[in-house]
Image (cartoon, rainbow over all chains, first blue to last red; front, side):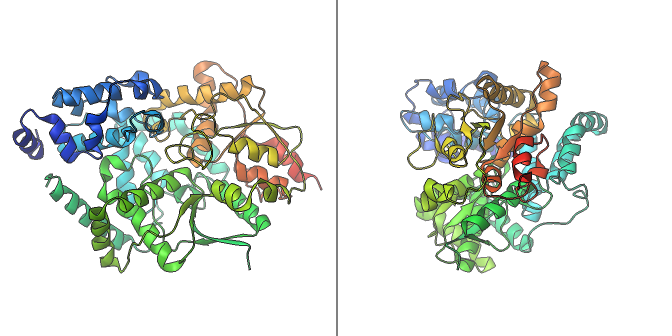
Length: 206
Length: 300
């Protein structure tokens, strides 16, 4: 268990709702949920959630800290915003799910192997280093995240897609070696570092 | 002087040799006809996209967008920011909305931007290209330059998520937005009015990390287009375009379907209708060739 996680457990004891309200993006909305279930029924990947959003909200209030934060559920969010526009209480559900996923990840207790968590981590590294997405590096990184053998297998499966994109000028075959990006990348890196420091301090994650 | 001028945020996928490079090509052609001048925000960066939240949290994510807005205010003052990518538009607009509602966030953002000599005021409106087309020009003005109506082509308007929710286009419903159908009509093609998967999610970034779940979504989107007799799908979003187009082969293999339907951008339809060549309309960038559009583009 990470230090930050231990500190949070001690600080909030069993009041998980209070913890979520203080530390999770848009977490102060959680208590507004009236358990109608429209969000769960509107989610495109609803069937893949172990605990759909409606359930997550009740679990937060019931103090099911581990069950929520260690869940794969929030990582199924595709950011389609259907739940937000349909919620009769206008809860920013998408953002709360993103916030819970981010919080669990920052505490080091999110599911290690979850592919979306790992992909998202690679994605941020990709954009934060140069300021812009390098699509080839990102996809190759994704295929090879479980090692060389499975990477080659996945790469071969995806080869027709990649070749199609290259042939139509939509993927740079030299992308692995290119140093593209923005001129202000060192400024941007400094800004992101400072932003993270401020946020960590405020949420006591540092 | 151009009739309309905007501060332009193209986004990563619109770069040369990126997945929506052909979108950009067609937007350039469309804007030339419509006399729209796009002033690119110098040295813009990624918006953080839909999965930036996981590692980027809140403040770092908002910094990405605030930097772009501040650059736009500095270099293209008094101009609305226009994005062609749905995620870029959404991310930028979301950041602006959050900062507007939080003095603390505004102070944080400016204390960070200041080190790079930038200041966020947050004045420009953040808009998607389709908003510019239908609000600033209007369907009538979009119809006027049509030289080659796309007669006889039945097109399913796949709106998807991020131009539609949570902000959406003014006056449109979340459940059944009509703007894309109207654009299809404007260029002389036939919209598939009953297309019931028009706002279904394609899986977004999860097409990479959860391919099976996303491909099940994409299958529904394509199947419904075929069911209602569409010969082509049109979309306003680079992620929708890519997901619905490039995985057709894999879906066919898995489900035994025979999908082979072109997925184009609204701007490609417009460029062709305005008389652009196939190359100018970015049709050479479609993996599933839009042969009907190519034929019209080739006509004198």
